[in-house]
Length: 382
Image (cartoon, rainbow, N blue to C red):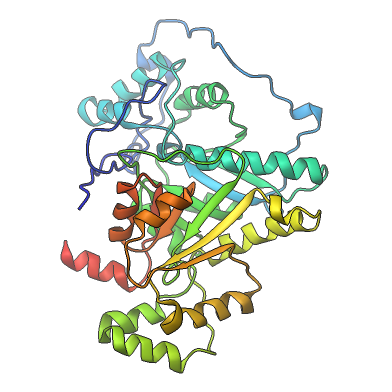
């Protein structure tokens, strides 16, 4: 079983490999700024002048690239702790306190953070946007990425420098200075929230916002740069945990019986159903231009359900919702890791840490959806 570190982007077992850009962190911790007074940059004792930022790309906002209204876009809010590697500065905060942490961030603000577990996913979202703008130059139905952080605004310069260094197109920031970001997520009409903070993910889910906790695997499988690939578990992710409750309480035979008896009864929606729906809406824009076979978005259902014994109800539910899944894998209890290794998704969503860890062992970026009956059992085991 994979061992996991709890600080700060949780790292799956083993020594984390060094990436090309020197890794560091922004201390995006839930308690980093709570109860602190407002900070004055002059009180930090920083005397060195900021270095000239090099390698900054030219922005082309005025050249026709516009920002969609939040209500029209597919908004993905990403914590700075999962977009970038954030270990080093977190240690500064924990060991030396907030004043030293802020001083360290300012002194190193021209040093970009290394890519984190959500980085490739965000790059894939931007690749889809490029294709959408080619086909629909005036459409606001695009992915809109919002960077969310608990950090004080002093750290914003380093984050902006990092975004420019990696050639990311992220213009919307939410730096809360220690306050909960959940209210802002609702104002942004957020379709998906990715964070390293499991408590805030649960808070978002309780408010009806699709959310998941991300982890950094020991190794990362190479993923496509031109096609966004998103994989979902079924029960307690796309669907409710109704059927999983039957299985946990009464066993496999009763579960199969329940599914056969309710084959024509639709499953209720789960926390990630809305995000799949948003992906499907964008896929149809490509289909309308005759690009079904060249669509830059591909979705996968990877479920422990058996096809013949319990798969029909799942497929009928998706059809009734008007949602298409490009590929459906019914594994009948077999390990998901090897299949995910072949799929190479940018992100895989599952409600059980056992499957998240199994995926990470094979190099897949997996995100935990803390929803449903499985969470109670996992808490009991701890």
